[in-house]
Image (tube, rainbow, N blue to C red; front, side):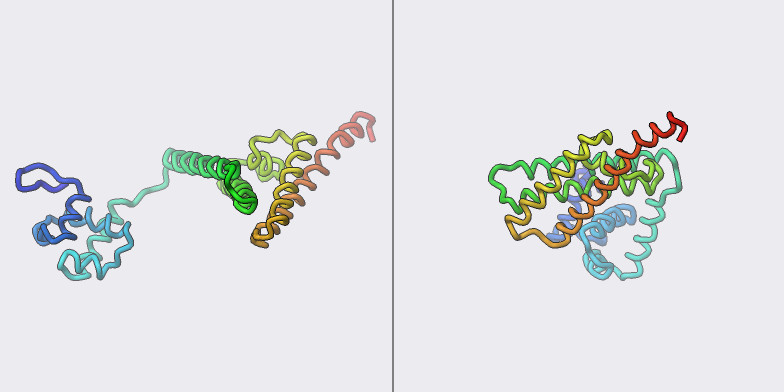
Length: 216
């Protein structure tokens, strides 16, 4: 914050607004405050040249400010930070998925909008599970992938049948509407293939167990 004429501190955004409307001379701002402003401008998509123009200074000064900002924001590998970041990623992914599922249940939505919302909800779950597998938080098993996408399915044949039926229903809605992107239809088909493979592996388990019991 920057002290105003009365000695009170002002929020950065209020300071930036004063700079933009010309009520504050940017040349009177100290280096630390300028860098805080520069960080906000970068977040708003300003270029180095445009920021330099705002502060009536050279681009070299702004680049030095950016280097200082990067140095200040630098982080080192830390297991606690990794856990917090991954936890945040999972939380937001679930929020986005749940929001998409709610959109798919909106009464006034078209068939196309509902089917695409269902599809995108599944995609969010799929990408989340894939990322968690890459990070080593989940095993690389298709049962795990599909299970987490579709609300914690436990791998039973009845659950897999229900999932397949859901995908077929989405495909049917998409075909009836005729406005769903071909890439979405392709992904739905791939999901059915994965479910089919999982179903086959689940069906083999009782047979394998029986062979072990009989010594075959």
